[in-house]
Image (cartoon, rainbow, N blue to C red; front, side, top):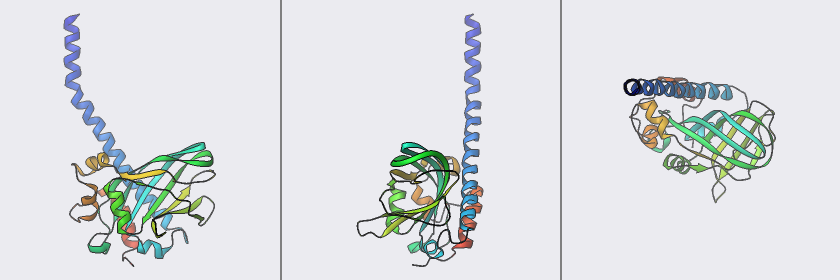
Length: 236
């Protein structure tokens, strides 16, 4: 019996690296799929006429995409999603769109919310302060400013600073019925664990997005090419 247990223990120890490799490969595939979904969602949303105003898109320093954010609520709402952010490279965000950092959205909101849905979100980061805040740690999305934008199932809300100048504009595309689609109370931050898998090593999110020295992964091709095609020049 002892010999059998010793044999099984040795076999398990021998197989552990294989299990870890398989798990890592599965996580890598999920990250690639997430980046591809970001590109697909971004293109679909930008292809809708009068959805995101072109002048706002042209003024954005960075764009964050969260495909299929899950929300479930009854009075108290909660949100969870993973996505990616790309910024214009170069001085004063005047260059072409750069490699994306993986992003995480998590948190909750309070209000009259009934039902559950998956919602696609596109966040426009309108200035350097907003970009620096997101890349440094995490930013809470809040405030009461909101207005209808486009067909039913789409809305826009803005997080504003003390001078009421918008830093982050949030557009959503709902895939179901939900009373009060909102990201209020949620936080947005770089996902360093996903970045490590995507780029093969630990790289600070700020360096990925702004340095211009990190090549974008193949899975981000559609996301970047869509941004380059739809808003090639920054208009202050």
